Image (cartoon, rainbow, N blue to C red; front, side, top):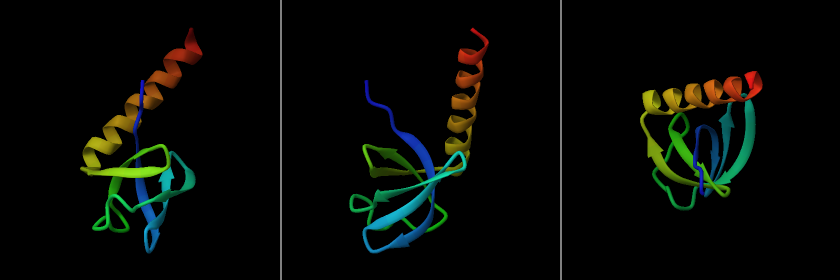
Length: 75
């Protein structure tokens, strides 16, 4: 199963960018999304930004991940 994680672009330089995912920053390739800008939310898979997504959708998905983590911790 593959999983793409929403992240916010906080810095961009050519085809690379720094994204924030739940307080952690990572370097990712923006080569597939040349029009993505700082402030955009994108889906990250295998080190590549693969799709720009709506902020509300990104935040909802991140909230669901937190709920899943809490569920796992409670079991």
